[in-house]
Length: 283
Image 1 (tube, one colour):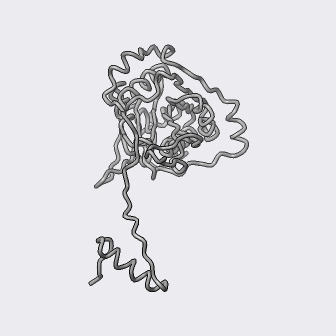
Image 2: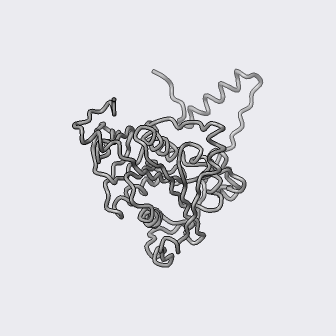
Image 3: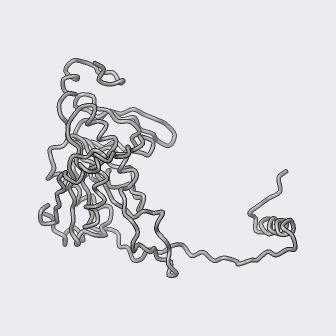
């Protein structure tokens, strides 16, 4: 039996690979960025904008499901959200997650990266023991790339970021990671947290049968009291205060180009672009 195309060193490791694993996937539901419009006050209009799972988190979930299919075990998702998250999380359940946990508390909305990591860390302690935590390298709404690393530090567990391939080797996680100027293969002791990049896989499209089954899978909601969190203490830890969110101010010159023929208009357009430094003559 081939366990992996990565070499397994001894029989004991093959035996340990047969142990069931518990994988927790951090899943964030975000507004569909393609549906967001900007109002006259330069603020994003979020009313009626659909929510969906962060794309990189879906790829982390796909990696978790692939590991479960290979070695057995359990995949659960963990989200910090609100009432709408319960609907969005059905996508994760239909894609292979066995159950979902949602931290739903109005007092925990709008936290920064540090306090969000604190909340998720408390939830992970409640879900322990686990073998592996997977997440996307960033969420596409904030692009902070901090949550995974912060959780690893808080829980004092191994961390490997920017994974494009993941496998289990005995009681370790083996990761091929892609950095800016090089690629490397690293191993880390379990439990560990790993963030994945877009290139790791292509998430599966759930079948109609799996979509129907998702509605019967358990979805558990927690609040700050369930986790033993003090909201007041959390807010004192927050290092960032968001004052406003606005799109950049763009002032157009409103230059209108007219001409008798399309050729004349095109010539004037090219000259205007050259004068603005947008175009330059090819030598």
